[in-house]
Length: 215
Image 1 (tube, helix red, strand yellow):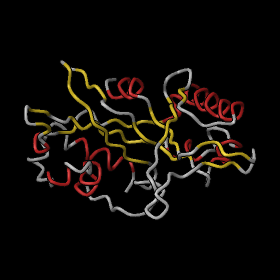
Image 2 (cartoon, rainbow, N blue to C red; image 1 turned 45 degrees about the vertical axis):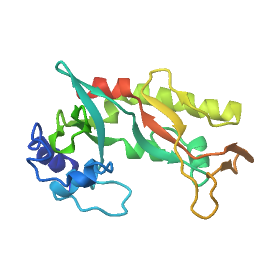
Image 3 (tube, rainbow, N blue to C red; image 1 turned 90 degrees about the vertical axis):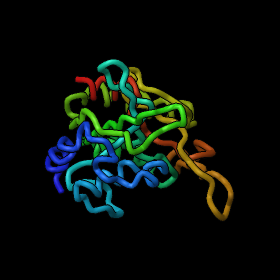
Image 4 (spheres, rainbow, N blue to C red; image 1 turned 180 degrees about the vertical axis):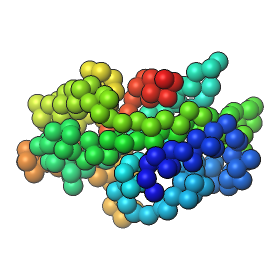
């Protein structure tokens, strides 16, 4: 399915509660809102590099404050691991996995309604589905990317870092291996050094997401 087709289908779901859409609220409690929405619009799940033929879907937790949508979390984009860290260190933004991954994004804000007893999934709904094309922000994204990569090279460490435009950030994103019970260290063959004790990831920052979905 093409991104534009998915966009049109998701726009039709806006402001309809997940209860009205008959989505499985038990699975919603387990953080699977994005997967359920993909199924709802007929997007086939699988082990693909991209969700759509030409882009990626990113659902994210938000709340409404007056008429503004406020993101409650950053959006994870791509993992930085021993398998790809050297590609990042040697690639420009446009030629990197990150550049490919976010060239076309479908941002899907999920308004998660809260009551005294906690979150109420059947009352959640989608609002302001947004088509994001990185070309419109190429200069700022490249500046953030170059700044982050430069910090890794000069410090020979990977640590939480935000770009000067506050569009991109890297921070740890890992879980312990089932057998080893350890996190996954990030080793650079190019620099011949261990850069981190954990995998990291690129994220879109909340301030940038807020700007995009309230335009």
